[in-house]
Length: 347
Image (cartoon, rainbow, N blue to C red):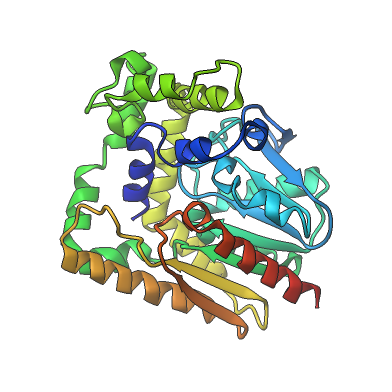
């Protein structure tokens, strides 16, 4: 599922990022067009952006292939009632390139080191979207005494791929056929074949569809505006070969390694405040048969219910009128869930 959703996010030009850019004002976009705080975690730097004041600190972790921009509709609201930090994983956004493999272990280690060296003290409320949800679980398993609560936003869950493949032969075939897609984009980046003027069906999966130039022009009526700078960044980042190596590594780890790492360290969370949000329209736009889409949705619900049961205070909620990116489709729901967990953690 992660591979499908990552490619859906890269394949249509701006996709998620430009959807945000198109609905946000320049002041809201300004923090995302340059690095914020770059924290050296040992050989590479992680870009982190903190706003607001108060405890616990809310830590926002994006899904596969995404940057901190994915949280731009929720971070300002959360900053009104506590400190909140979003960040770019290694090779994403403005962060430096980390060593391979980029599995859950490496990602959680980077985040823990970043928080320590940026002097962002616990307790934390972890908010993870998609694969970021799986990383939040591993973080809580390792550093439970630092974690006051969690909100998991349409999260990945242990052995998710196996659960989906069991009910969707089409997904299994598609992912098997796409095993070399990241390598294709990596080679295209290495050889300079990715750019606005070469947008095509072949390079759509790498972020350069045929309408790429038109999308950029539409967002650059004012070339000095944050929306234009953000658009240029979105089309510049896929030129970075290390991005495709990182995505390929994250995707390979998703199949088995990440699940094994999470399950090996898994523990019960007692009465920790925990909310798991499931997108009601997660499979909207899916290329799979309707029956398989319904089966995948049921498997997703079941996996999310299991996550909620890790805490005696766990809550599972299906969010209507929301696709996989609940924080963009229904930001108020995510904000409310975070506010409730923060309030519970304070009590």
